[in-house]
Each structure stands twice: as structure tokens, then as C-alpha cells.
Length: 133
Image (cartoon, rainbow, N blue to C red):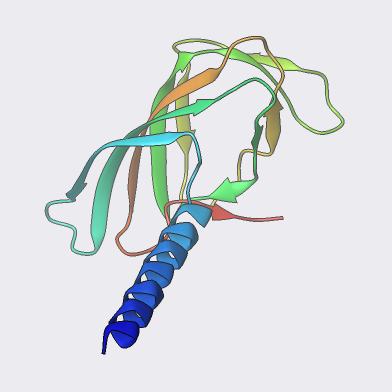
């Protein structure tokens, strides 16, 4: 009986680990969630506030959200889109990305991290980030 329990525990741990991996595969690795709540008066929607940090050398993949992303830049730095000159994202600048609009696709090339405060108003149960090619 003991080997069966051990095998079941191993399977359960592997399934949990696989679930965690698949959950983070649709997230931003530098994101720290601050608060999540249902959007009152809008069934099936939720509000998620986060702080996201991208370190020098990090690439921000092209992605979209199933809802609106708003926020501001806590700490600006230089970023570069493929084949383009580097541009500065300034501290204090606002962020606004509309539902299902692809954005991102740049690399942090400045000497400081890019830090963002974001608020997502999104469809509940869908991935917060959906990466595209």
C-alpha cells in the first residue's frame, strides 16, 4: 500500500508543478501582483493591479490582453524595437493599451530596469498575457 501512496503523491506533485508552469507561461516573469478583485457591475470581469520590472537585457514579448491595460512608468529607461533606434520611456509617462491590441516587442537596453505600475480590467478566467509572434 505504501508504494501506491508514494506514487500517487509523486503524480500529484508533478501535476501541480505542471499547472504552475503553464500558469506562468501566460504571465510576465517580472510581474508582482498587488491586488485582484471582481469588477462590480460587470460579471465575468476582474481588476488586477501589478508592478512589473524588466531588467536591462530583458525582452518584452509581443502580447495582448483580454481587456484594458492602464498604468504609468515608475522608472523609465531606454528600450529598443527590432531594427529601430533605442528610445527613452520616461518616468511618469502613462500607459494605455486597449483590448486585444498587440503591444510590447522590445528589449530593455538602458542601464536601469523598466518598472511599471499596471491596472488590468480583463475577462476573468482568461490569461492576463497572451503572447503572439
